[in-house]
Length: 288
Image (cartoon, rainbow, N blue to C red):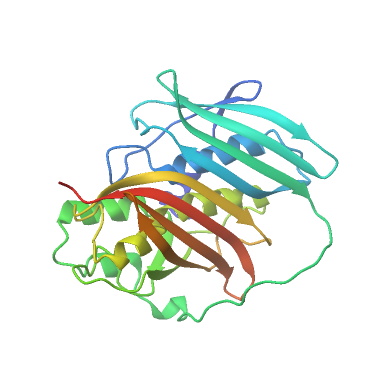
């Protein structure tokens, strides 16, 4: 396991301070606020620790309410909304400086047989044939060196490979609002299914709004031609997967309006199983 991955796992390992109350810490991100994927992942850790081990996450729905302060701890309060025969529901409120910064509702289900079908996996190149994240980032001379280093630092725990140039790599001309990345953790993980859900939740917030930027030829926060933030985030976990094995994150944007952009995505395993569906809306504004 890489040092960066171990550091991320330590970050997500919350401190229990009371029954159904947990405390997490943060680290710096590319923008001067807590990375949304970190808060969502930590909230799923908090929720999952109150759920029986035979019930696995099948969905989450979250709202980002305020920018998180990376210099202060985050307290996660878990409400046990329901424990049914098949489903368990939890609500988590993340608090900083006495105010909620994030809310999450998550549902967990016991395993059962049922109808089964899925959308086919879209075509994509083998991840082994693509440049690594570091190779691609260092190949963009227009990016300031400190921006490259911060991006590399925030993504060091994950091997994330873009199929095509990300928005900050080639911008100025609108492109199809569709992007693909392959990702896996930089090291093996344990077998707890919740851990793999948590890591996928963390990564899912890294690139989902890229397709919004592509549609308008914008480079994004890394080059400063838009400002934005996540508003809400939803995920449905359809089939078991491992976050330490290659996953294809296929993303597109069907709409942008009113200063908001919508991203939709599907995550497939390398052998073609549809593992996760993701939807996110974010603020996307052009600086005045």
